Image (cartoon, rainbow, N blue to C red):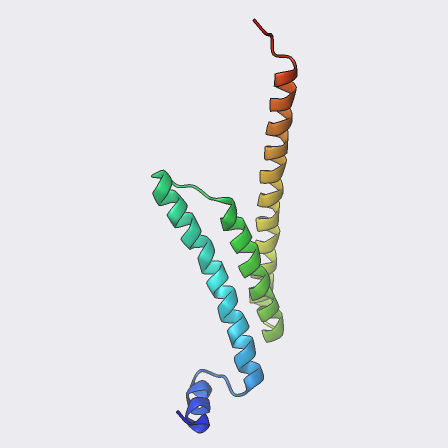
Length: 119
């Protein structure tokens, strides 16, 4: 394929420079990360034979959301920016809740073992 043919095809996709191609690649990588969260959730649910949301889902959500937010800012798309920024807040909040719950559960387990009656 010649360079002219390549750029003709890229032009058909709205990509007219190497810089645009780089940013489209960033956006596509973000979309792949975002898809990854659904993939890990699906695999975890299949293994458990019920719907579950593994911790990796939230990390993929944050990674994909951050990359897509950067892409949206580059594209100056306010709808896309607000959507990704709002989603990021929710993903981070879910991780905070998960880690707080785990810390509280560990503290309760330690506290319970201190007062265990030996027989």
